[in-house]
Length: 370
Picture 1 (tube, rainbow, N blue to C red):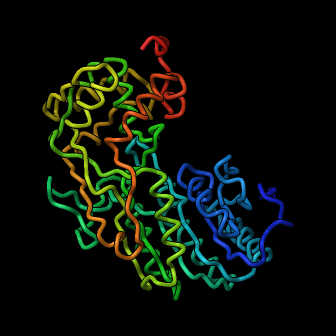
Picture 2 (cartoon, helix red, strand yellow):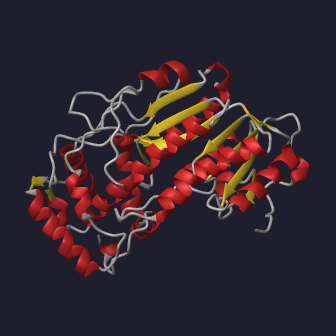
Picture 3 (tube, rainbow, N blue to C red):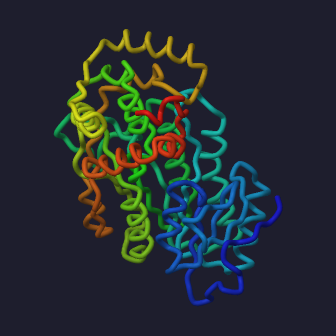
């Protein structure tokens, strides 16, 4: 694997600044975390492709965490350039898709990639002040409406993505050695351009007045916790800056404290997009599964549409308490989904094609007409 040119000249690296290593640095979260930290730390980014404009100050090293030799080579470069001490390793790299199907990458990247990284850090003699892992709130067992999930609540992985995060957390406990660890179980992420698979798809369905936009196979009083990307980036920043004041093993739930129900979200989107409420009609799960099966067969795109496995989880409710993050990290999310929805819809109306492309949605032929 060839070396790459960092976004910032190596001659400009501050010998006074501490160093932070970020895996998955080129992703949506990694880019924003890098932007939040680049004025305070020397940043090294591991990923398959270089980061974009959000992370211009990152010393990028092309790294495939599924390959022992490549991880070893990349860590050797980090030690040669920055020495053996790392203020924090922020481990974001993981595999994820919405097909619901098993993939070897869940194990090769998310689980064994975590083991490979920790083993490599130890083998190269790195002194790591903090190893921080981005897990998911989806590893938690769903709760009831009005009852908050906490760090002490039961875990439950129902499909490959949360299952892989649970196993990766186990690897961290087994392989961390004397490295202090921080695990962030993060709610669904969004920003003002949306960048949330479930929300962007529902916005598109309502915008196009699809029949599927009116029906829902779960309890419409339930909902999913979310967190704005800017608030999440600030959370990572606070965790790094406060690392010397944290316990040896910390676990935080990262989410907005209030949750919009599916019915609330549906009605609000209808008002914003079409100027009228958009009812959410509950239908039997068997009917929804049959419809999803037909739609997926006719559509022919594995990444699009509602999957039958999603219907089984439609009743899940995630409402998290963030008291621990407030106390230990002094972190409080500034955004709320209900206040961000108008920004998403404004982006959609101002630039429909841009909204679809930014959110990885196929652009309908008549999308410009609304």
